[in-house]
Image (spheres, rainbow, N blue to C red):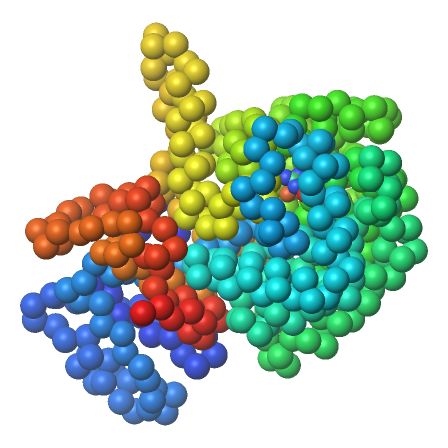
Amino acid sequence: PELGKLEVLNNTLIGVNSEGYIDFIQSDFNEDDDDPIYFFRNTYKNSGSWKHFQFYDLRDTFQFVVPGFVDTHIHASQYPNVGVGLNIQLLDWLTKITFPSENALGENMSMTHQVYSKIIKKTLSCGTTCASYFTTIDQPSTTLFANLLLQYGQRGFVGKVCMDHNPVYPDYEEDIDSCMDGMKTLIDDLERLNPSDEILVKPIVTPRFALSCTDKLLSDLGKLSKERNLNIQTHISENVKEVEQVKQQFPNDKNYALVYDRHQLLTEKTILAHGVYLEQEEIDLIKQRKCSLSHCPASNTFISSGEAPIKKYLYEDDINVSLGTDVSGGFEQSILGVLKQSILVSHHLSMKFEPKDDDKKENVKLSVADGLYMATLGGAKAVGYGQMLGSFAVGKKFDAQLIDLDRGNIDMFSWQHTLPWKDLIAKWVFSGDDRNCIKVWCNGRLVILKN
Ligand code: GUN
Ligand code: FE
């Protein structure tokens, strides 16, 4: 429920109403004496809204519920390329693999339908109940993507990729007018798509990154976000060569963050992916503008971009940090997997210190609690839903996953019922995967049910 704090509610009854809100949380039933069902019937028997209900009993199992994961950086269009491109660094990876495949996909509705359906189903089944997506520059298939989110029941931010400057692969760019027209159509489409009483899909302003945009496009997108009160997502400072090229392309800006800031793109509704090589001045600006970072350790390792100093960002710079799979720079569709990667990368950072600086190691190592925070509430805050999602509290929406420790990759033993919660959760984080996620609810609705 807050940075660095892992809270486990034992013997707890959570009531979720038909609108998907958490109505009550009754904790600390005495395992032997109190019967939660009896309590429930007694307390709510006169309440009309609780006439019909479904009850899940997790007692005497290795099962528990966790807030749904928020993936704050994922390219739906790149799903077919997962696992491809090891040893190619960012700029070549974009030119040789990513731009051609995004370009081919965007124009082919049958392919996009397959790819977009599969990535939504896959991330949902990994416990991701909300995600901030990049699609391609193509607007009609981006609207199709939003339809699919609603169909499968995942909350999402839908980012049509905006890029008007792509000298390394000129087939894949559009002029400013068609980009801005596409954005307006997308915004109108999504307004019509949401159910009348709920907003489940939202457009998000998505300049790909500084290198693929002109000043004019960045400026128009900053204005659009301001006028329509829209979230923003982009990449920042992922790779050393990228940072050098940004300095060449924008010689008047002292650093990468200032390119975005000059066009009003750094706001409290902005998600900046990667942030591996940020200068302190940029970090201070990001903090001042209340932007969030999306940490993508699987991607940063796979295409060897670098190791972001996340513990420092969280604890010294006081920046909100969330997690992103960054499919397909990242090879993980699962935020649980990315959480694990974030801890491992932080351990690699810590191993760079000499033995005499052992105390400094702890300053860079992320804990399981840090990782779970970034995967849930940190992500919810990044997309502007900190009050609505990311933890269990009365009045929040029930976006949740049911975890069964005793399956898939993990074998539990009967005597391990007495293991401390901290150890059970660590087992899940380090040894678990999507097979342990057996039910998923989004907006209070059961959207994934596995046998
Ligand atoms: N920078 C600009 N575009 C991309 C992308 O598609 N993936 C990653 N990882 N970085 C980028
Ligand atoms: Fe990315």
